[in-house]
Length: 130
Image (cartoon, rainbow, N blue to C red; front, side, top):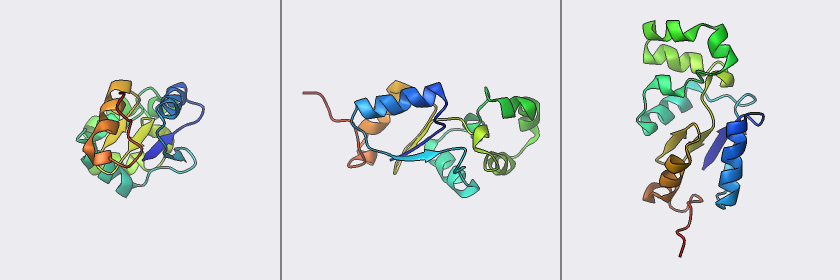
């Protein structure tokens, strides 16, 4: 599993704590220091089944400064992906990326479900309580 986060983000901190409490081992990646590439984003978006817009950090300062709320409607998916790949602070976080799953933002129930699916078996999935 790949855990992409911004260490100063409180939601990312909650997600990291949750993963640790569940005993899930992940490769950590600092989103600002190692921004996702356009190819990574394309693959993750396809895997997630979500629209490209869901990958934008709409509450971020950069998003507001760039007035993206108004600009995204006129952009193609490819243009949005290219824009996301320019700065990790534009990307919604945290991201949890597995072989066949991608979780965008931290929603405990979604992460729990994703980690229990057969597609992530052996990748640090949560063990069932007995």
